[in-house]
Length: 117
Image (cartoon, rainbow, N blue to C red; front, side, top):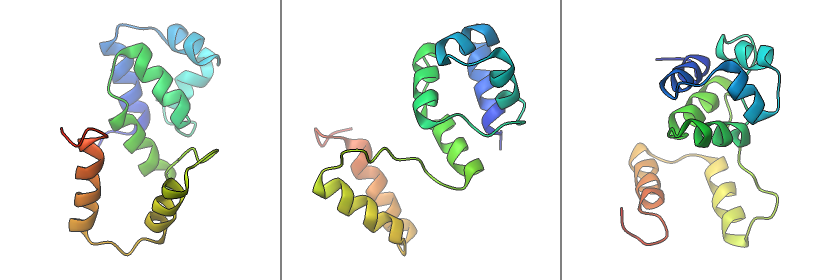
């Protein structure tokens, strides 16, 4: 399974962008981007992953998943959650779900607000 850094580097190469391009978009140094790609620094934040994926015109999902796997935790912005969002996230944090239940949750998320895929 590729590392977060390997996935970021591949996305950058496919997009035909340079380390300098990525650094400029993220407002960080070229050295920092390079060290993340080489696995010498932890994965970017979810916000930076989204920004970089948009710049590369790439799907952020594999990068977010790899970052979560490497960090050992998931980043969720809960600055101003609704009551239902807070209840749902708190429930998920308690765990104890079967693989089938996780799959069902994923399918609901994939359908999105319209209820269709």
